[in-house]
Amino acid sequence: MEQAVGVSLVALTAAQAIWYRLGLQAPFAYDRDQVFQEHPDWRVTHNEADGPDITNVLIYGASTSVALYAAHMVRLSADSSGKAIRLYGVASEARWESLKTKPYGYNAPVEYRDLRWSGRIRELTGGVGIHYAFDCISEGTSVERICSTPARNGKVAIARSREGRAWKAPNISVKPSYGAVWEGLGEEVEYHGFTVRRSPTARGFAVAFYAWLNGRMDSALSPAPIRLMPGGLESVVQDDFQLLVAGGMEERRAIRTEPWMRPVSAEKLVYGI
Ligand SMILES: NC(=O)c1ccc[n+]([C@@H]2O[C@H](COP(=O)([O-])OP(=O)(O)OC[C@H]3O[C@@H](n4cnc5c(N)ncnc54)[C@H](OP(=O)(O)O)[C@@H]3O)[C@@H](O)[C@H]2O)c1
Image (cartoon, rainbow, N blue to C red):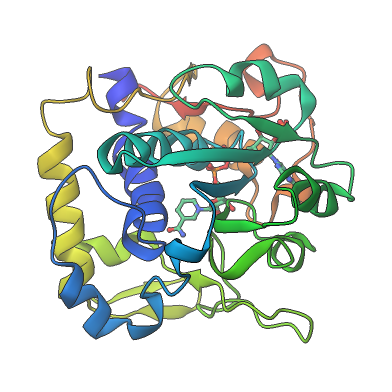
């Protein structure tokens, strides 16, 4: 149960980015034509015939819990499509060893604190660029940098928006796609000062995703590591809100010395209630 509670929304967040928005092949069926009717610009437009045999995928913020699921999903896409995928990740060096192992299998991690990472990624792809990118941080300059890595007609998804809109910046040539996980509910939701529109298509995808996941947790998707936190709901306010803060990642600071208050890295916080 403790591992399971760390799966539901974060795995759907990753699935919406990797399978629903970017359109990598999912290991289950859902109505893709309906998705394209609602979002015509999500159609895969890069011509796979003129690309290399290998599809290049990049995940920025590879040690976030969203990214742990996203990387595993990229690997599942490679298995279900039979196509080779080379997975590039941007994360702190301390996480590289574990990110290279299964189920993530990153081929080439690079350090996020070295702001030359986007140039390094372009070099590592031999100039081809990235076909599918997912920015799991979407703060500071990450969106602009990740948007400098795509191959021709490559696609970018982001995890955070500005007031519900994907990022716009003068020097971004790719239009990143954004969605809030709550759209999986299929109802209109007020979130971070904007309205997540009712989308039967997003609802259909969420239903298909959970139907696939149901009963398959041991074989289909490895739960991300968890940190079991002391206390119950009252501790969510006094501990969790301090650890995760209301703003962005850059505002997170180690402010307390208890072992469970160390910075969150490659794990989910779990409470018993
Ligand atoms: N769209 C949605 O519906 C939705 C749903 C859920 C989450 N989100 C968003 O997705 C993002 C990830 O959420 P999460 O809960 O998975 O995060 P998380 O697990 O709490 O992220 C912590 C990790 O982020 C890494 N990190 C911090 N700053 C970074 C940077 N500048 N560049 C690269 N990596 C950095 C840290 O690495 P180190 O420890 O190595 O420094 C740490 O491992 C958040 O922005 C969240 O708001 C969106």
